[in-house]
Every structure is written in structure tokens, then in C-alpha cells.
Image 1 (cartoon, rainbow, N blue to C red):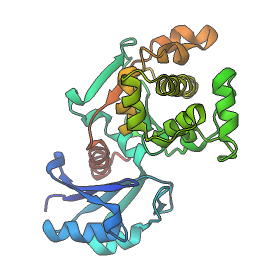
Image 2: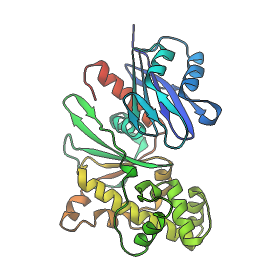
Image 3: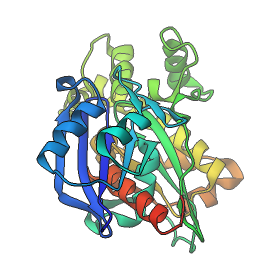
Length: 316
């Protein structure tokens, strides 16, 4: 019997579910569910399987939250996911849970070419070079993607909850201000959709969602432009620090709704200057290609890639 994979991308607001097999993800099978309409992932899976009945060989889910010992707790919604419960609900032989950025890292070799947009060209990547995925959306996280003889390997990470760096000027003042509500000053307090809203409120006293702030910037609103410029400065410094730690000469890939929204403005607002300002290491930083992933199915493709590696004995 051919393998039939159940794949899930569990976000803070919506969950996408699809099927896959030897050819990877079947895009036609993908459906999206509002988390608010369900009590948990098992409820969504039951609804989905009811529409696509048949045996399931393995389940793989990328989850917007920490994963440990076959369990996951979403960060921005009160869902606890039990791998054993999913195994019993689907009849699958195995269940694999990952942080959502991990599975997006596993997707890099399977993305449609037109979904990867070059933001800053960099140099030609050496064969087997490390890559880095940075997710900007409701939260922020990173995934480091290694190519090995056994296939891709993407270790877990919660870098979005590490502390923002020391900075001077307006950025330093903002980071100090964020400590009033986020005592350890996590990266995602500034670098996320809600983070852009916090920056705008800090500068203007008004509250707007990220999408409206970007619209205001396009219309020439000075507070919105200042907020986006400060966001870009912090993003450049933080992304540069992470890149210097891992040297992703294969590229830095931004992914997520906030990343797609801010990407058109990064060049004009000086992102590359902040990203590469690393003293004697500036020439190396300039060689790192920077790209944007514009594919809503990336996490599902990554789930399929991991299961295919596992099925062939090439464990990720």
C-alpha cells in the first residue's frame, strides 16, 4: 500500500491540513480551518478525515509553539496537542510534531521557484551551504537548515524568545520601553506584526494593526514611516546577529505574513546597511543572499519532505 501522509500547519489563528505521499504535498487536498471553530487539532483532523476518508500512514504537523516529547503547546491559543491522541485518531503508524519554523526549513528544497523572491542578491552559494529561515508573523522565530548526507536537518529553536540586543538611540529607548510589558525583552516583542504595532504606539500614542501602519506609510504618514524604519533597523541588527552566529551562506529566507508585508520597504529603509554592519565581517555578511518566501503551503511541503526522508531512512 502506498504511503498516505496527513500534514498540518497549525497557526495561532488558522490551521491548514493536506495530504501527501511519494510526490510530496498534494496542493489540491489542502483545506484551511479557523481555530476558533474547533476545540483542538484532533477536532480539525476528524473533520478533515471525514471528507478525505482512507488509511493514513503517518502524520506530521508544524505547530506555532514549543514541542517536547511528542507534545506541543501553542503559544497564542490555548491548545495542547498530544501526539499519541493524534495517532489513535488517525490510525497512523507514526506522528511527528515540530515547531512551525522547523517544517518551513524542511520545505526549502521543494518550494515553487516563483514563490522565492530575491530581496538582496548576495553571492553564489557554495554547495551544501547552511541556510536560515526567519519567520515574521504573529510571532518570530528562526530555523537553521543543514544539508547532510542523510538529507536535510533542521534543529528546533525558540530564538524569537531570546532577548533583543543592546542598541543605542531610538532603538535602544524602544527596547527599554518594551521591558515594561515584556520583562526579558524577547525579539518577537518588536519583530512581529504585534511588534510593529507596539513600535507605532510607542512613537505616536495610537494603536493600529501592522497592515494599517504599512498603508499609512505608503500614504506618507510620518509616524508610520518612523515606526517602519525603527522596525527595519532592529530587524537588520537582529537578523545580522543570528546570521553571524550561523553563517548561512546559502541564504537568509524571510517567511510569514509580516515578512511579506514589510519586504517591499526594507531596501529603502536601510535594512542591508544594518544587517551587514559587523565590522571586519561586513564583507562576509554582504555575500549572504536574502530572499522572501511567498508560499502559504511551505509548512505542509516541509512536513511532507520530513516524512519522505523518514520513510527512506534518511532521518531529518
